[in-house]
Length: 133
Image 1 (cartoon, rainbow, N blue to C red):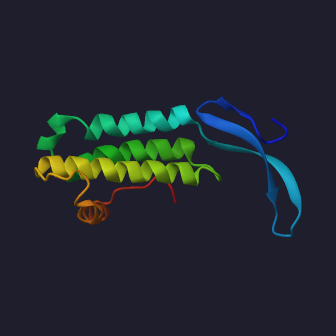
Image 2 (tube, rainbow, N blue to C red):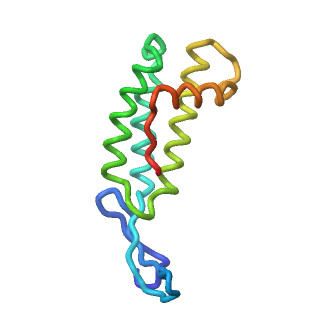
Image 3 (cartoon, one colour):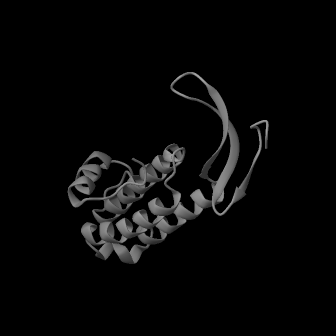
């Protein structure tokens, strides 16, 4: 682990040594934690359970936003660390994609990713939270 090429997974995080430069230009070694691959897959699985269920086509978008927001807040409270912003933004994009697929299935639009701008605007209006800041 000391050379920074390898790390280990523990409690949903991948721990790795890294060299960081301070504002004054001094370099020092530290351990960084980012969500591991298995944790990222579990996050995607939780989102897909809510938005991939065909029974949820009967629900309104604001109901699903309330359900997803609870999951987002819980995941953000656990996984939000200094260096994990890049990985969490990937999950934010995945949530937008799943909402777009759900929206197009509900409205019976053919291309699955067609109305993504409209869906993003609606999600912002309804107050969808984000994992990454």
